[in-house]
Image 1 (cartoon, rainbow, N blue to C red):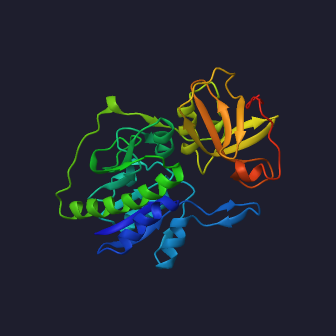
Image 2 (image 1 turned 45 degrees about the vertical axis):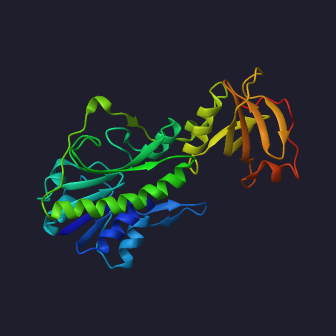
Image 3 (image 1 turned 30 degrees about the horizontal axis):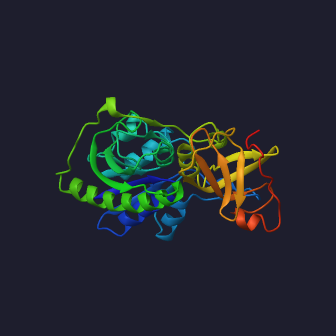
Amino acid sequence: MKIVFMGTPDFAVPCLTKIIDSKHEVLAVVTQPDRPKGRGKKLTPPPVKVKAMEYNIKVLQPEKIKEESVIREIEKLAPDCIVVVAFGQILPKQILEIPPLGCINVHASLLPKYRGAAPINWAIINGEKVSGVTTMYMEEGLDTGDMILKKEVLIEEKTAGELHDELSLEGAILLEKTLECIAKKNAPREKQDDEKSSYAPMLDRNTGKIDWKNSAESIYNLIRGLNPWPSAFTTYKAEKVKIWKAKVICENCNEVPGKIIKINRDGLFVCTGEGVLIIEEIQFPNSRRMTVDDYLRGHKIENNIILGE
C-alpha cells in the first residue's frame, strides 16, 4: 500500500519505523512545525520529522492541517491509506475522505475508554490495572471511529513514561497487523459503545498539585501518572517541591493530612486522608531530583511540618 504518515512526538516514531521496514511505501510524512525548545529556545524538529529525514522521506509541516494547499498536496500524493499516530491536530473531513482504504489511527488506550489527549496519564491516575492500544478507522468525532484491533498491557507499578514507551512499541506491532488486514481487505470493524466511553483531557502544570486529603493510594497514582511530565508537586515551607517517587504503606494515621510524621532513610512518612505515603524521591527548587536519603545528607527536612500549606 502507498501510505501517508501523520505523527509528531516520540510515541509515533516506532509506528513510522515499522511501516518504513515493511513492504508498504511511505509517500510522505505530515508533522507539526519545528518549535523552540529548551532554555536556549532553539528551533527543534519533531521526532517524526527526524526519523523521516533519515530515510529521505518527503516531509510536510503545515501550521494548520485544514489549509487548502495541504489538502490539495495530499490529494496529489493519492495514498491508499493514511496512518495517524499522535499527530496533534484534528483532521478535516476532506482529508478523511482522500484515501480509499481509510485513515487509520493508533490510540494509546483500550477504546472507548480514555478518548482524548492524555490517555496514558489518566489511566494511571485513575488507578486502572490494565491499559493498551487500539487501532481504529478515523471519523470526524474525537477518537470515536470503528475499532479494528486491540492489545492489552498491564499497568502494574509503571510510571506514565514507562507505560508510554511500552505502548509505543506495542502500538507499532498492532499497526503492522492492522495494515496487513487492511491490505487483504479483511480487517475487523467494531463500533464503539459510547455509553462506556470516558475522556482523558490535556494535562497542565496544575494537574500535579497534591491534595493531601486524598487517599495515599490516589496520591501514589497521581505521582506515577504525571512522571515524567508535568510531575506531581507540593510545598514545603512555601517552596514548591516535585515528588517523583513514593509508595503506600499499610498504616493508619489520624494526624492532619500532609503532616510529615516520620523521617528516615526510606523517605518522608506523610499522613494523608486515608493511609500513609512514603515520599522516596524529591526535587527542591534549583536542585536535581534525588532520593530523600541523598537529600538528607546535605540538607535538613523538619519533622511535623505540614506539606502543601
